[in-house]
Length: 186
Image 1: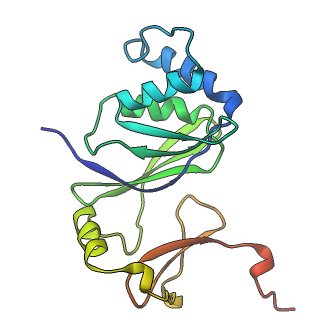
Image 2: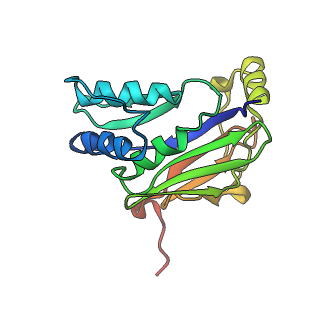
């Protein structure tokens, strides 16, 4: 029996000059996952390896990993090994928020070469089936979002980010809190 999981959101960055180090880390952790490396481009190799554990990587024009998507919802045993390898080179503060079929929400948080897994509470995150049904039944683009100022919370594991829910449609969103946006009382 397999366990289903779903991607909620993420902020993932690995600089282009660190991609080969991620591959080397994967080779050291699991030789079966990386049996041999031919003379392919490192981004192709890492994309192929990600696909083996059901993830798709997105790449910036300059070769940085700037995001990822879950290719399907099945859990793979090698997935954690892949995340640990990414952690060795991910920019500090990178994270991936996930929800399981059991409604448990967790986060993989990448900080200074280490992978941390922690339970998180993300307000307003429905079960993926409910989210799909809600998106199909409501045209969110027509909503003039009004934030619930009582429900603003700091985003777990994302310094300077706050989470907020729309009072009209219930959609959750995040925004970066910049110091120039704050009215400082003197």
